[in-house]
Image (cartoon, rainbow, N blue to C red):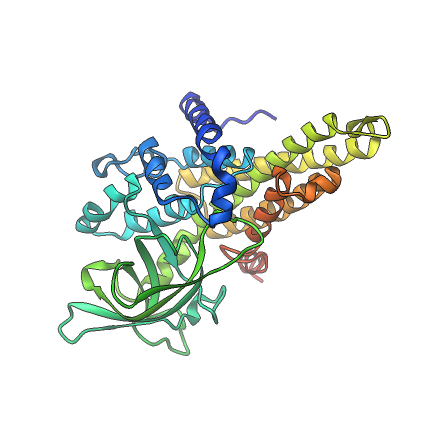
Length: 385
C-alpha cells in the first residue's frame, strides 16, 4: 500500500539524511559503540544540518516545522542503515515539547538557540532506582530556599538516556509531599545545569543494545537550582508528563516501525544472496512464507503508525491511542525482527550484520516510555475496565 504522509520536501530531506549517514556515520559507528556514545561534536553537526532544531521556532534559530514528519524521516533512515544517532531522539522528540509548552519567554531565549545548534544538549530524568513506571512514587526532592531564590535538589536517577553528555537535564522531583487521596501532586520539573556543584554522573550502564546511546545513573547532592530554572508551575509536573508521554510513545512507535521495515529489507537482500544446499535461501517455501508474514505485519505497523502521526500533527492523538500505537508497533516489530534474524542463520547473531543490532536495539522499546503492561493498563482503563 502506498504511503501518503510524505511530500517532496520530506523526500529531499530524506536524501540529505541518507547521504549524511553513509558518509559521516556508518564509517565510524563501530567506534561510537565502543565508546558508548558519539563524540560531542556530532550533535553540533546535527545542529548545523538543521536536524536538532527542525521543530524549534524560527525566532530561536530553528526550522519552525510544526509537523513531526521530518523527525520520522530521520528515524527511518537511521534504522535503514542499522545505525544510531545516540541521544538525538530524546533531545529532539521528547524534550522540545516541554520547553515550548511550559518554558517562559526568557527561558526559551536562553535555551532554544543552543538546543537547535547542539551547543546545549538536553536529557530528562524521571526514573529512579525504586520507581520504574510509577512516577507518582518519585523520591528525589527539592526544597525552596527561605528567600525563594533557589531550590536545593537531592536524590538519584537511573536509566537516563543522554545523561552522561547532557548540558541541561529536566529533573522531575518532589517539591511537596503527596497525599493518600492524590499521590500525583507535589511534583515539579527543574532544569538542572550539569556544571553545577553537587551534580554527578555515576555509572554509565552497559546495555545489550542501543550502544551509542549513553545511559547513566545520576546523583544530586545539595544542587542549587535557581528558581528561574523551574519549568512551568510548581507541583504541576505530573500533568505535564502525562500530556507529553503521548508524543514520547508515538516516537517509540514510529521508531519501531522503522526498525521492522529495515529488518525486512535486510532479510530480503540476505536470503536472495545467501545459498544453502546449492540454491538461494529465498528459494525455500519456508523463507517465502516467513517473509510474507513479515511483510504483512510491517504493513500493518506502518498503517497504524502513519495514522497516529497524522493525528499527532492535527493535535488529536490521545493518550490511549498513543498507548495502542506503542503497544502494537513495538510488540509486532519484535516478532518481525526475530523472524528476520532467524533467516540469517548464525550470521544474524553477529553484530557486524545490521539485523543483529536491530534485534538488540528494538528489545527495549517494549520497556521504556512505559512497559507493554503499562500500555495495556492505559488501554483497559480507556475501555472502562
